[in-house]
Image 1 (cartoon, rainbow, N blue to C red):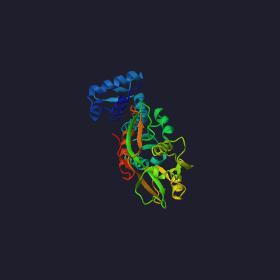
Image 2: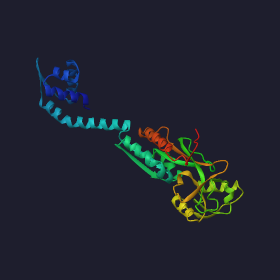
Image 3: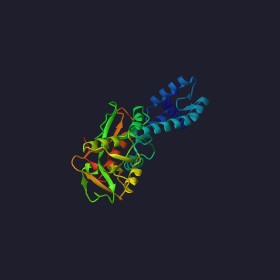
Image 4: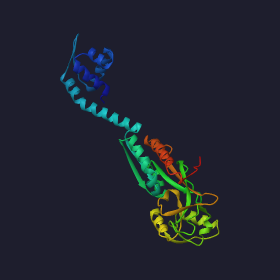
Length: 307
């Protein structure tokens, strides 16, 4: 194996025609240059210089090696730059997963900030419910996942993952603008016991949260429409087809009236999960930008996050 340092020294010796001049140019001693060339000749198996008392003259093998090694050393230098860029996060790939409402309200600002800081990096985003993106973090196809959990539907996360709570969003009641209680600012959920409800699918945390909150007021919600698309839920509520329990991030439509719950305020908590041993240098930057983007959300969305 040819030593790149010896090849760089060879190029300087051929250029200057002198071990002493090459040593001055490279910051070595003349004896160090001479020793390097002896080691290189031993590796090649042929003399690279004709030596005299005052100068050295490169042989045909030495000339060939000096010329042909330029491209090799250039490629090696380029590789070193690329590796260094990946180590510090100037290049590389960041892979995140997140759910739809966070993708609409949080991820755009966070990812734009990452790209602005590291324009040479690739940023990939996949969308899915928590259980759909969780596996990607566990099997290392994703660097991190933004997920949620409801106070009314607590869950546990894999112990091998680290988690950071970004924020908590209050659960609020959305009613049509002409609803009988639209002029109120806060109500008990029991006041809507006789209303039709719009809700997410039966197997979702949001649906379970509604069922449990209603049970605390001694009623079973009469659900007439289901959709996991909060845009659809908002439109159905706005057109008077029912009322809904929504997390703060899902509130975007001014045609709705949003009412706070009286008493204890249940929340949907938004967290980011990641492997503690993940060495991707872009991950700490992404976590910091996600935290910053979360603080810039409208105050009405946020509730106190747990430490």
